[in-house]
Image 1 (cartoon, chains in turn cyan, orange):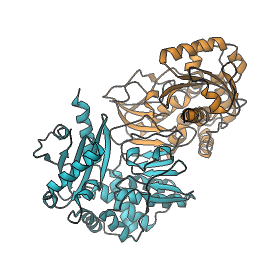
Image 2: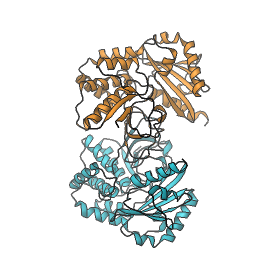
Image 3: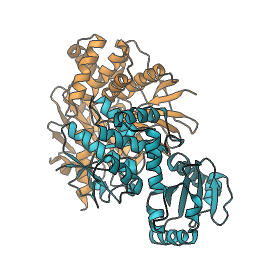
Image 4: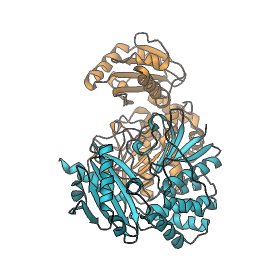
Length: 310
Length: 310
């Protein structure tokens, strides 16, 4: 049976492209592997796949005990495919914190503190002396552009930058032109429902036994989105009720200005004031310089929760 | 403050030498790092350190929030330094299953399904184009000999084998002669107390919410050890009472014959019969072909517990 490779739920560009690229790498290493996705392709990813003429992976609902899998761009089970606890996990390639992950037997687990899974994947190509095709280079390049907002996010490392330039040469594209077009393709909110916006790139975290949902939307026009604030609040409150979230944080990141507006709802929304040293007005605040969920939003909220009852 | 690097509690040769070697590697990468140990040096490790004229690392009792650390040869917090939950973990280099491990922020986490941490470390030297000194080669070689019982353990991979031969050339020693001497140095049980024997290489595992202690002793003379069976049972029962273990398994591995005798005590000792399809007599059984705690003992006991109440 083919090894199933997939990224996290609500897949972003890194999760989709890294699954495709790792499946290609495994094939070249002689293993039978297939890329899957755990959710819909977003417009940014669609732009990248279309540009390099690559089909989107098939949708995967869940995995079973008999499945052997590889995870990319995530490791926490609650962000993975339902049933992941019972599957055989052969490998993890990631760039996030490690948590809520457990296996019975040893595996290949490679997480590095860089801006993008693709940066780690490129290293593995090099270590195995395997040539990177133009398509794979284009996909990895797209993932790095997406995760680092064209090298502007504080998650960006020297390795991401170096890898991105190398990949753009292999892919033979103008990095700035392609990158901005790809980001803009994902940044329009007009045609999206409130539900799609708050679930599109959302992850659940356990913090101090509380369930915290953090959604992020990258935009070029913040006002366009918040004209629909009432609609967003209604959709978020529905999610809170349905899933018993203690906190729902919508982070709206302006990719041109490199800051974010946050909308916080749920019983513990006040934690946001402590986390970012801001005052919420109508449950909202501007977070200056904040663009990274992983490096800025998650650790700050986590610290605020931890100190809450000290 | 210097980065603290250490292996698991009750350190074996891989845990001690990998800490020393990684500290050396980090120094060459320009980082200030110091190797530590979380327990006494065993006679096998002492033989290796003495042979290559390397001082044992200092003992570390616990870590605090202000510490930045790197873990080698383990990742599960209950096998690590007390206080590890609050320290900043920069890196993990390991070859075990991943479990009971969590960070708030991304880190370098490199676990591979090979027989020894040193095999992974050697790769990292190569990837960074850093030359391996004779001493480091000797220590890594010793770790691989120890963990794979001179390539006889089923945990041994092709990578371990290849790496071991390369290292023995750099270290410029006769692999077979050195290896057998080192293993024998660690295999004498006469001069050790029962407490030392059952705690020397012991690890605690959580299985299905039960606390399972698995100790392993490598010997060349099984009878010599079991002449002291009553003394061992008394010591184990004290450990069970003091630490509320649900199962204590002493695995006595004959490194010349490549099999093990097991002594199982505690409320759930019967699980061993199910785990290995054997009958216990006076709480003991011969486990033919079993030499690896990680690859054979732990997964089999884990499966037996999981199926216990199905």
